[in-house]
Amino acid sequence: MKQIAPRYIALIPAAGVGARMASSSPKQYLPIGAKPMLRHTLDAFVSSPLIAHTYVVVSAHDAYIDAIVPSGAATVLRCGGASRMESVRNALRALEGELHAHDWVLVHDAARPGLDAALIARLIDAVGDDPVGGLLALPVVDTVKRGGAHVSTVARDGLWLAQTPQMFRYKLLCDALAAATDASVITDDASAVEALGWSPKLVEGHPRNLKVTLPADIRIAEMYLAAP
Image 1: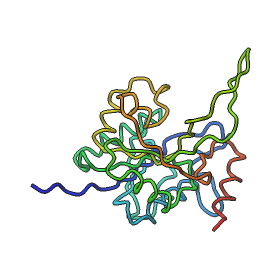
Image 2: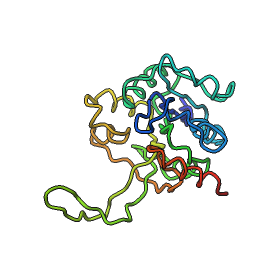
Image 3: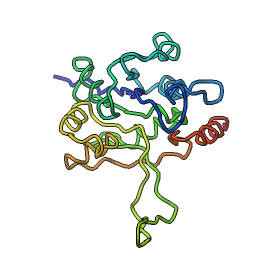
Image 4: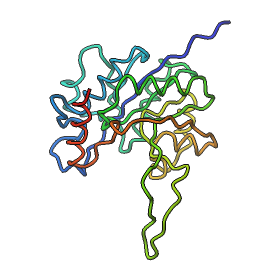
């Protein structure tokens, strides 16, 4: 029996409150240029011909999402949890029966509005048929210091800064997050997969794909988005 070709599914956890932004609304809805941050993120996946469908995960009582997602552009899942890991896990459970075990799931932070179709294609092309999957990341170029009572320099060879999307087969991602018990240790999807003994592929991303965490990051994101 011929196996159905795997699909590429985008999953955007967007149930966080963004406390460090000191804003009255969750940070994923703050304006970046002329659009809410989450809309930039969503548009990147919608513009990619490689993505079969996009799902956005929000909290059960999210009052903003309906005004952000264009009709038919994505499916909203109101099953967000208290942590990013819980939101992704809940979404994967909700999609049981919708996705095949070998489908690829690209999990992307809502607060990375600089993603574009070219970066999505770079990740998909580089991962190919890798048995594990992979993620966008940036090699560390600055000198790294370890603080404390005795400051020391850390060798930066082989160090990378993880970005998203992080792309794994549906079943592997489900298994990895089901095995995870401590959300404080599992800071991204790749760390859950690594905890099972697998080594994801690192694919060089781009500085424009920064995560907006502090108010000053908004201006930096706007600068990248304004560039051709």
